[in-house]
Length: 609
Image (cartoon, rainbow, N blue to C red; front, side, top):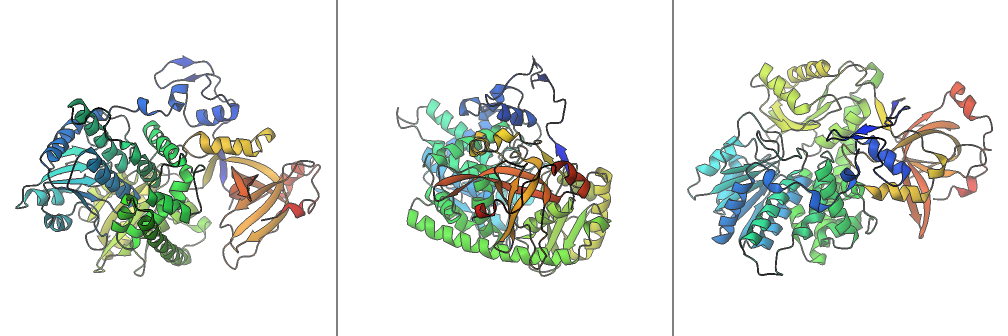
């Protein structure tokens, strides 16, 4: 399918820019390398200071609303040896936030810190009344939520009614409802009145900032003899993993936190659990980048929360024993393999009900299957969104079967949580629960309301998106100059900055001759390509390009959207293009490219894998 290719760096790129502070900078340089300078400016980095990802430039944690009260409460609990219980979400952000809270509090002096991760199939998401009842068996003096709690009115009320006096500290980053739960303290940059500059910080980042503020307070109060101050740097690998895996926008704060964490991992200072997960994914320092954490480590950790119980994931992250961590990591890897099989089956069943994309009438798509697994619907929704270029919600039944739980993924132009809130106003009672972010959300409805909800969701999407919004497009950094087709440029880009949501890894487009092609592992298309006659060809790999049973086209000239990568084989580095989109050129488009084409097959002997 042809996509509209949009250029992040169109002709007539501004000769002068204005910084966020409003100062005029005539063509100020933000990076010494001209290509990197262009790539950073394409992403809104208009001043060199914004490319300086040092810890000293992070905002003061005390700017977060409720932080002083949180520090006071945590300090009091440590001083009186209180029993602290951390209740987390069951995704990667929640698991890393939980490990950060448990390990960090112990490092700061807390003697009694435990954790509880709700089983999604038994307790559902967040601080529910049911999980509070379970927590009461441990008789905590303080419950800390991480990556959840901002909408947990019933759970907060349940904490207040416990026969054992229990304080409640909510740490979260999700968008706040109109009324907040009755906690003792809430820290969340997205609650009303919070002046913390980063609204995109992940749940693991919020609890890390609380520990940082607590550490500073206890140092000022003289709790630690000189030279024995707690070291929270050991938590940075967790922070990088949770931030990347939660796909939060990489604003300045998040890029800095991820950069610091990746630097620590690549220096060899990585905890046994993350190290074991990286090894299983065949990744190793010092070449770890954000995509390794997001696509290799994160899914393996998330798989436990999707199919079983995230407790095993938290244990893996907290383990200091390499042998134990390795065993737990292998269990997580097995969960991930099972998740992949379930996901593929669910995706296949959804595609069987989906008409050709050009024949789709709906703008907002909803899918439900009674046989689907509720732990995997979010991934399937994401895959279908990428395929259809539309907001997608996938539903699976709960254990009783009368309520269905949905996971939603959006496209630019539609704020999912706001859309669900509008539907809730129009049809009170239709949504049993909902919450989330602009690009991802969760909800529950009654099974018999599926058709009604689907129609309302489609109508709400139509009110926000135009036909052009769902036509499908891909944004690139333009065409790459020939002098940058080398491993040095690929390495520079890969390690120059953390890339991710809102700060995408550079992609380029161009037209190429195909001088050799081959199918690898039945699913992947390997190409040998050249820009024009006389130039050395370059390897390209298009992962998952071929569906089983589909015929393989023989390409001659193509338009590619790609990323630069370095393929390391037997200690030899070679440039490789990771293909993100491929279109065969039409006859007329090929004419200008084929003035002096290379001979097909000339470089076939180089097509070695």
